[in-house]
Length: 277
Image 1 (tube, rainbow, N blue to C red):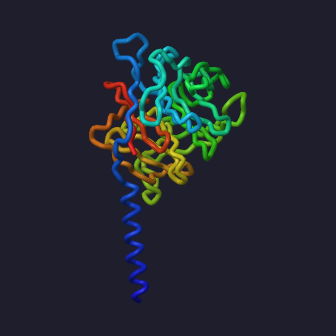
Image 2: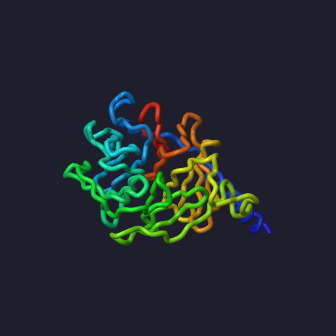
Image 3: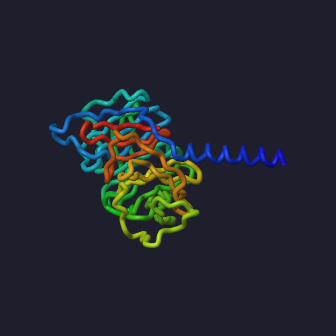
């Protein structure tokens, strides 16, 4: 009887610990200050993505919206190592690192397709080439997120995540999709008025991030409650809720990324990416 009692206590403590870990508050750990000011020509406004390259040990950050908008490269401490004139060279919406090809990839606006960056000997992008053209994403403003474990690219499309395979050099194609049950755990089940083709106005509607966490692969930004919610890729149910500090900048479109185990939000006013962990 005593052993059973001890077992129950340990189980309750473990459950409480897991719940606390799953609902923790994130802390700011990094900043990446983008070049230029809002008064400069082709300065950009919205952040497309941040990408960590483990080969070069550098961060790559870029604006969305125009091939002339800035891209910047930073070392691990957040110091910019690229010059102020470096541009995206493509009208991109995201950047990700592919460990198989060891290349930086990007997806573009609408039917611009997917692209690959070439880097110079210092790890700075010096050229961009089309990997494949055409509409290889669900919408014109879709932001790609690469899961290196599953080898899929995720795109948020209203209330579902489209899963694209990236094995061909000619095109990407939809492998599957999962409906997101916004804010609901599996024990709660689906909501009574869910519609996978309807946008949820309480969340960033352009961007899903790939966490690489088994069973909690999809990260979505709740702009109403200022938290990042993690969902499983199999059924789309809530697995973890990560609260952001009150000062964290949240936007309803773009300006959200995940790389190097850090969640990134773009401060539009101050033109910098802020990392939380």
